[in-house]
Image (spheres, helix red, strand yellow):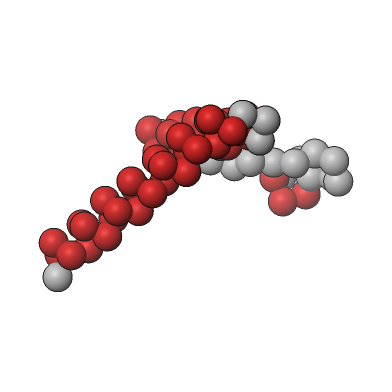
Amino acid sequence: LSTVQMPAGIPVATMAVGSAGARNAGYLAAQILGLSDPALREQIRESRQRMAEEVADSAEEIR
């Protein structure tokens, strides 16, 4: 079956191929584990905040 035709009850998380996909798969797994681990959830939040700041800084450099 195609990922767009999965029946109800069979959730699909599709990631890219390569290092970006592997990294995103790790983030997804951590996010799922963070549902029951407040400390991990906070680490994920902090990591995403750092990434957002890096993107903003990079955008400023381009301007």
